[in-house]
Amino acid sequence: MIIAFACDHGWFPVREKILEHLKNMWHEVIDVWPQNEEPLDDFPDYAKLVCEEILNWKSERGVLVCGTGVGMSIAANKYTWIRAVLAYNPEIAKISRSHNDANVICFGARTMSIDDVLSSLDAFLETEFLWGKYERRNEKIDCLC
Ligand code: RB5
Image (cartoon, rainbow, N blue to C red):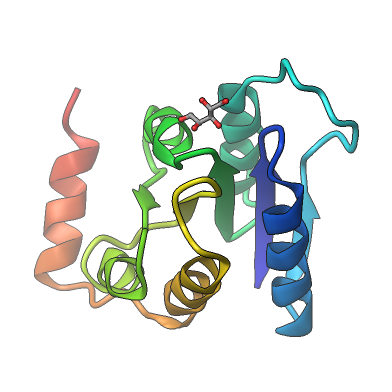
């Protein structure tokens, strides 16, 4: 799977572990982070880059990391067709896929253990959408404004 990735400042240990984990699982990662530590950077700029990768059909899924995951998920969900989940455990990640067809997952580097991040990431990538009534509900979300 092709996965777009970004994190804001300060979360390099988590960033490196996520990237290594994805590569070990043979995923192709598009890391949109500009590769220079900028303490004044803003997470919406990175959420935008990852969402654009998906909306332009360059990536299938997105992974966003900030301090809590909250800001990234709020920013990503501004886009129609982006369904971002702040998944703080594997069960949330799994249901966000099977029921909600989430295409972006957000993590809190300050609020989650690396074990919870990686196990939630695995659940997100391995779980299929169930379609049926869940598709109808997603279509209703797309009509909200
Ligand atoms: C930035 O310091 C912090 O606010 C950000 O990483 C995130 O937690 C926002 O939701």
